[in-house]
Length: 216
Image (cartoon, rainbow, N blue to C red):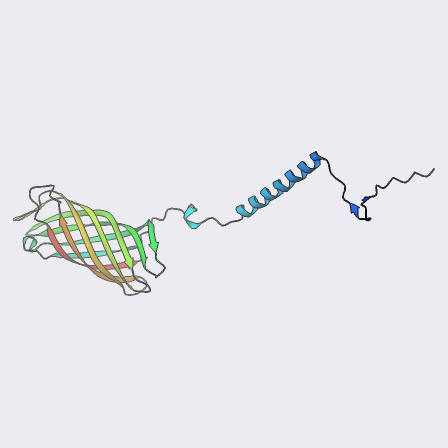
């Protein structure tokens, strides 16, 4: 026995014989709109998920290697500090704040740490310094400027007839450095060390400082 063919629903014809689209129920229309909105939201989510994460948001491991390390040799030049000098090993670590200008200028922040000695007039003191430093480099130049200030601890503050007041001092400086090669460089800076009037005795020391450094 043959199965009767299923009835095929023909489209309704308008006055001029043009097919009229079949109307859907309100529930079906709402379902279609929701599906379209869900598909659009899902597509936007996929697009956003595919965007790269900015470098500043990435969790980079802490790098304990210094940017550069070297040696400072200083000679006091003011009358009160006559015959005084110092030598110290130092290292710079890069801090996370820095700026690059469209013109090519680069500004970076660092932590500067030094360990050495200060002496003269038959007396010698241990010396430790640590503080922020700023480097400013012009576009495509081997020369760069350094600025900084470092709290300074001494193991003694009297040197013959010179009394620096207390064992705690501040050292501020400004200088110019020259990258001779990719790794080696030299520089000069002017330093001022004093206790910022934390003591009634505050003669201060002004020094010429010469630098040799290795850049990692």
